[in-house]
Image 1 (cartoon, rainbow, N blue to C red):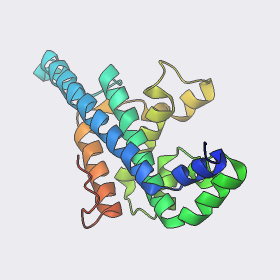
Image 2: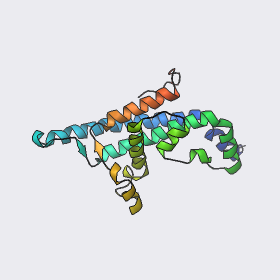
Image 3: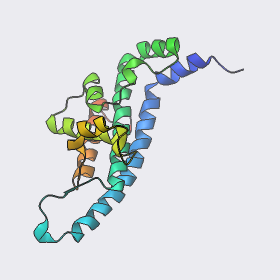
Length: 189
């Protein structure tokens, strides 16, 4: 006999280990795509004559966009892990009562999720979180935004840098150190 679907849904939604497992899987995939992206950057930079090189900033490459999207999804799940860990009971009850994701877990805005998780970040982290959010919203998924307002709003975030992979890796490590200061969860990147 099958259990109560609402209870099952609420149990899984309020189980921080589920959020951590998803984050871990996304980190692994992002790492693979990040390596491919770095190879793409190396090739692209080698093709630019040295006299014309200033800063290696180009429009997003195919692998870089996907890497950023997966990293954004991973960070989102890490922040939501922290939110679930800190609010397990209320998340369980809201999920059970309404049979949908609780309001605190519906956002995809990485800056807001970082704030809600009490993650301390600097201005550079905030800029990267915003760029990653844009990647998760559409740059990593579609060739164009779903509307022109999004394009105009995020036009300044429509770039990739040859430093992105290492900066993203460092940010993920920083978040992991925040949520797992004693390394007991076994998260690796």
